[in-house]
Image (cartoon, rainbow, N blue to C red; front, side):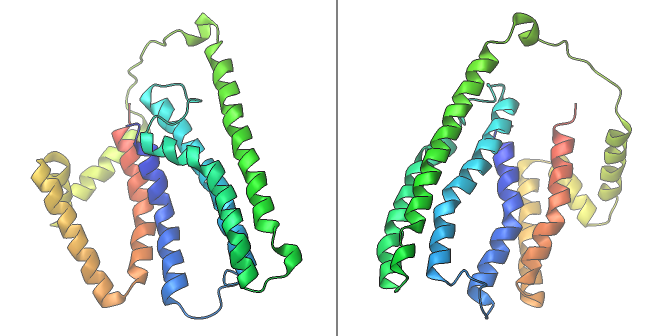
Length: 236
């Protein structure tokens, strides 16, 4: 379950990434400033800070779900490695932008802006990591009463849980599609693979008929489905 926040975070970015690729590669016309070298360099230099905020918050949730201190560094090795590289990557992107902007003929007075941004972001991320360590030290110093285990309670299913169960049973009752979903949920691993292959073939067929916008529609439609699945799998 500790990997769940990263899966959800990646899924939430999926519509944006699909649309960005389509907009940059397939759709003609001006790019509203992204085709300006200085703007592109500033945006690229800022990405490590955006990614740090994203991974830091997901790591907070993942640590809480996994039973670790929420202020610890992410326990997943890949995420921990990416977070460690982010401050230096801001500096490197800022440095690499200098010769690129110079060759593009940008004004000399503006050449250092991406590097200055990279330096600020470097220290901002370092300060954020230090603040995380301070918060962890404070959380460890809680009193025994605050850290005492809480007795588990088994409450009756809420109205929302009952509604979710009823919705799931109605989905199972749908001919063909509902039967495939029920078999995937309750059946063997081979049933899950069969269901995934059917979804993939259906998606490819829809793209062939209606074009690439199907990917955007599919990703947006799947957002409530994914959150409903998270609610169902993590219910008490």
